[in-house]
Image (cartoon, rainbow, N blue to C red; front, top):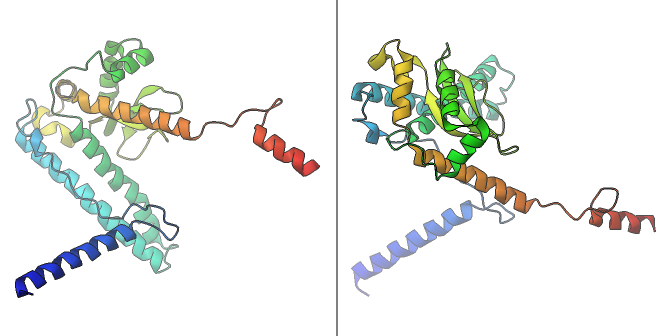
Length: 265
């Protein structure tokens, strides 16, 4: 057997075994699929450079701040895990790092949502489900827009987020203080606007209203529509998998009623 062919076969076999090992590592002892754990990595949003109303310097500074949140989130998770393993969960350091984690983690995620829903000048398509949902919840698209921009002009540092509540189907514009305060539990973010000073002061100084208008002109409504469609699909999938058992007279499932009768006999 030629040496080169032999080495090639060894290489193929090694890669195959490695891939098989990776596949096994994604299942637990019961054979259930487990998501592998990995560090967070900063995403590339350089496609936004050149966007009208947002200078490249403003965007570059904003990208750097976002990258800092990614770095700090990984660092805090590592430090907290180290304290857990060493049994120092009663320490002041553990408590303060835990409090800080929510700030850094949400700072990372909100920036990703914010940058992802920017970069398109097309208006919201009346043919999209998200448009109908907005009208159904607010009465008209213009009334929703008025509420969204008014929320963004409130004093303070934070975010404006259009949230979808899977439990009720409602849409609501929420003010998020800093990064981690006032998020509605169990709801899905659809549209995210950053109103920290670093998002606009370099270009607009103290005129936040002009910034919010520029933001609105560059919303990527296809991205927002996709988020809404995915959230609704998840609700429908969940409802299908948790369908209630047939109800017996007086309440309770037929299955439970039959089981009770057998127990009594």
